[in-house]
Length: 85
Image (cartoon, rainbow, N blue to C red; front, side):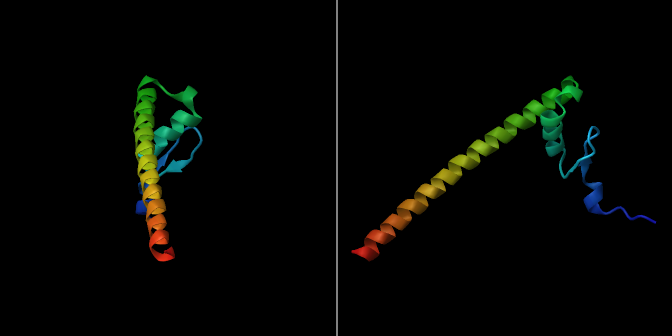
């Protein structure tokens, strides 16, 4: 008797290599990057959309991370000026 847990039920498996991913989006990105020759036109379009979405998210993350680093740098600089004088 096998029980179907939520972890196995929610995974998306690549038909080409058998790797499993927790979301459909990650599976689409995997198939587009690792198996581009196996994709049809609809899958290529889905890959492009997922790729551009991820690219936008990464760009946003980099800008926010840079802003945080700048704030930390100047915050520590101000603390140094206050306590060193």
